[in-house]
Image (tube, rainbow, N blue to C red; front, side):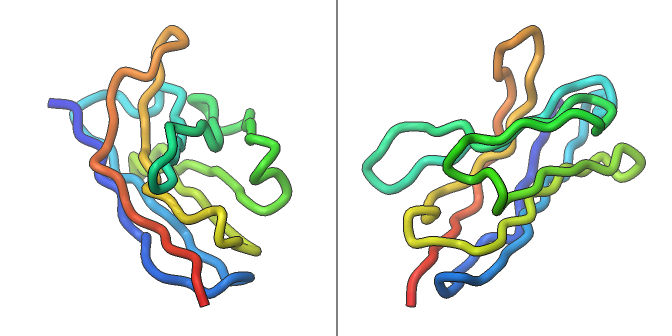
Length: 117
């Protein structure tokens, strides 16, 4: 069974940092692209970042470029999202997602990030 379990969310002040983790199991993690997708309260899904299977290629939405960093540890079956200089508009549920053939086919349960003073 494919499982993606996010952790690391919480309440942080504007300008602060958080690191999200996503522990994967039930599949060959090192063979898949991984993504972070978020959903702000009352809004639709927004793609945040992507990383290729080997970790050498990364992509970011313009809204987070320069502030967020995606990485992965294939030995630990874990993908990370380091979030710096957080803004109130970064408040959202963050989902870890597996990608295959351009489709997002497995989602975690999400972790809530709240940026507020």
